[in-house]
Image (cartoon, rainbow, N blue to C red; front, side):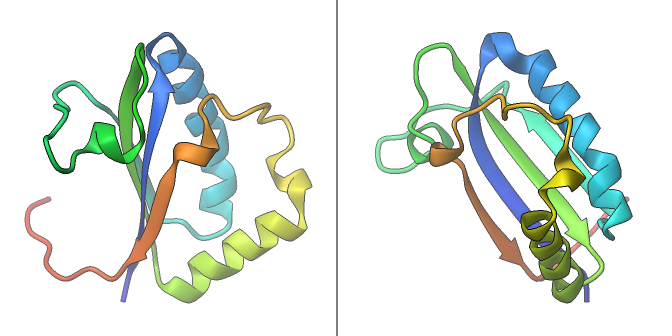
Length: 119
């Protein structure tokens, strides 16, 4: 069964292209480690809520945009092994530079697909 990792973070609006390049540069590493696909999505209609919302979840600051991302892995074991390898072999991510976002306000989690439809 496939395994999906979801990510939610805030990126400064003026760092959009830097973030895109960072994601594109990381993709070959993730792919080599078994990731099937990755999606990076720039918020264009992400409204603050009264109780909960994406902006509240990432503590969105003035001039930032919410980014919603996910990666699909063949299974959790492949995903866990890939992350363990990246943590033990940081040279896999050499040349990536600094992350163009505040990782302290990033959230992520792993999910088993429940329902899927469409292409």
